[in-house]
Length: 107
Length: 111
Image (cartoon, rainbow over all chains, first blue to last red; front, side):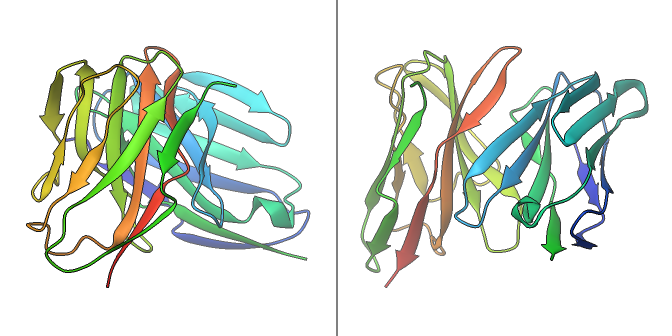
């Protein structure tokens, strides 16, 4: 099945800093989503982005489907951005998740 | 507001007992899914259903069972055959070209 690798596994940022999270996947996909899991476990959908670029406030994402990777950019990070960020892809089987990037933003 | 409702939020199971986790959606999505998350890990697929009265096993289906009698509902039963059921369980539904929407989850603990 499809393999999903996220990097880095852990990231510590000072408030106000920018960051880039990466997601590599092993096969062609028809769905790619980025999620933020908050401390209560809720998975918040950030982007549905099987290809192209999208922006939502301080967050933006780019997926280059032909090269099988996606990037999530967080600008001017805030403490409320802390949590785990998951990339998940869907090809011929339902959504497959990476192991996530744990982000800690310190004041 | 449309969404996915999971209940209960917390569930305690005794050894050898079957328990059922509820998942209801009012998004009119055809497909529904159950995932399991262990501490510090990503999500793994248990079962999924793309249409009423039909469902397929995911990667870790052993010890679990599901039913899909209504479009809105996809309950998950954790049976006594599941040797390590303590985990966080997440239900989702999806619509083509719109991605997956997740419920708020059920934390199951064996006591």
